[in-house]
Length: 368
Image 1 (cartoon, rainbow, N blue to C red):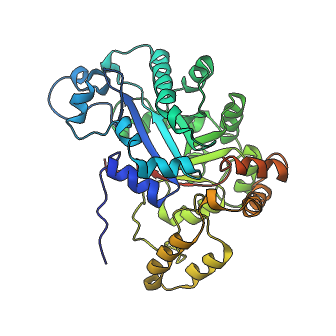
Image 2: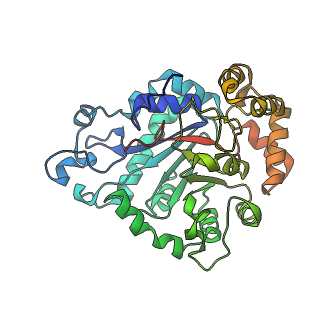
């Protein structure tokens, strides 16, 4: 069996891979000193020198590209990616990164505003379908700034808040009080009041000891905790990270969109023995194919999954009655607000936010 060679996170190869094999991609955007988008996660580039000089926002696009970093314009020049994105069913989760304090860019609102303007300008020629892009940030200013500038794309805030500098371990440590200070119910209410169509949160809010850290009633990915969760969000999207492979099936069944690091296309079976299908939203399985895949042996599944990928219709190719059937089942099971007619109408204009997706984290998974 061929061993998958995982491409570097946020690279062109990783982003193309995620868009092909999953329901979409998550990636990070930063602004270079000359006002162009680069796809880069960390605040500082590695190497010698002070933090000011190594801050992405203080480096030119040419300097950043010399490190092997892809620009957003380069990504958008890839027709193999933009064609399927424009067709519908695929989603790009775009994270706006704010500068490290060493970059000495103190006006976060102005910085986010500039990013929003550039993103709209960059995407305008593509006429993307509704609900095919979600912009988010750890910055609590993402919502107010979007409202103040009339930003045309949906935004949401990542929870818990992680400051834009320091090691991942330190960020997690600093972010831990967020589990105590905010309940899932409170986050849903805040996001809804800000007009945000989706919530993005760490799995620890729903799984693990952290969900008991606050005084509110805990929510979960199964049982009574799941029913409380779905009744509270009433059709709002819910994007969660990380997405352990052993929880993938149950999280998708719960109606959760996954930000996944498990993007190996040669993994055909989940730990529970069921077949793995990586495009539940953009190319949904029907009952017949689900039965065939789950009933096959692991050695047979690879060929069957490839056959399913070649024969099943993608989301934009589905007939209206099939779309209606799918969203009606999801809407009733997950307590969406509104009527069957409303859900079906939304489905014609793009995959509803409440429908679960499998999104490739930084394209093909974290390699940092």
